[in-house]
Image 1 (tube, rainbow, N blue to C red):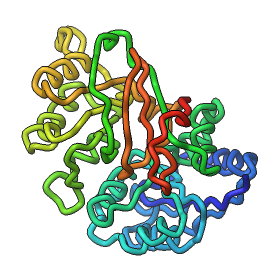
Image 2 (image 1 turned 135 degrees about the vertical axis):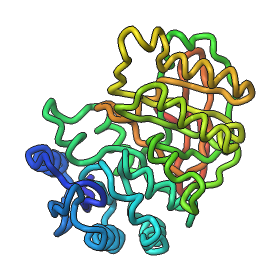
Image 3 (image 1 turned 180 degrees about the vertical axis):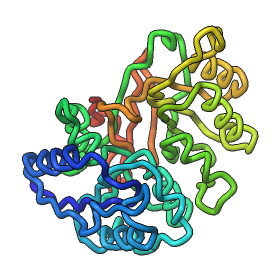
Amino acid sequence: MTKHIYIYSPSSAIRDKAAFRRGVKRLQALGHEVEIDPDALSVHQRFAGDDATRLAAISRAAASGANIALIARGGYGLTRILDQIPYKAVAKAIQKGTEFVGCSDFTALQNALVAKTGAVTWSGPAVGEDFGAEAGADDIMEACFDDLVSGQGEGTGWRMPARDADLKFKPVEDAVLWGGNLCVLTSLLGTPYFPVVDKGVLFIEDTNEHPYRIERMLDQLKMAGVLGKQKAIVFGQFTGIRKVPGYDRGFGLDTVVDRLRASLKKVPVLTGLPFGHVPTKVLLPVGAKVAMAAEGRDVFLVWGHRHAHSHDHDHAHSH
């Protein structure tokens, strides 16, 4: 299914041009018509152009009429311009059928859109890191992306790690899915760009953060009253964790999860979601209503046909 994909750079400058070119070629090889924003390769300091340049790129993505607006890469840059983004124009583009896809720094724009307009975007791949990966694009990621472009995607599934084999939780219905990169999300707390989601499913991931920093961010969200209001919290992948030998003495991500579970008693904390700074990532609709249930260690997260708002479990296919 040929789709029009608009590639733009709202965050950091593209340093790995070879990966970017590979990503573009891969999307073309999948049969898509790829349009590259005129400033996609711009550089200003660490950014893909100065703030005004990147704001203009977001506006062009919204005006492109593309089926998919895909970020070239994440990095840093969106939190700087959240007070200037044309949210109404982006929400209107989404309403007309442009799906905005990205991850990492893109978390800022996704959650700001939920807060400001309720519009749904997709946590998913970036061009360089994912489609342009040196080892080749990940099959599961591509299958999930294909589900989005073909309009077939109705949900996803994964198997929780063995240590969570005994975890039981009540099925979740009619909950808003939100979250993304933990560090970026936490930086929005107390601003008008942090969504007020009660009884939602909050998913989180991060990279290169020590477990104590992950715990500190979670504690901030917990003490701010955010975590206790959710129906579930789902840990994606936390990569690049480097413990300090001889100092941490067993303090790691499992410790953080166990302590969070003990302190949140009523809110289930799930782990193992295939999403984050990893090759195998599913696509997740941020701001959409979802249902979630488990059979043993197998978890099913279902959003049905988004525009039909159906939660038909029978047709959810798990990757």
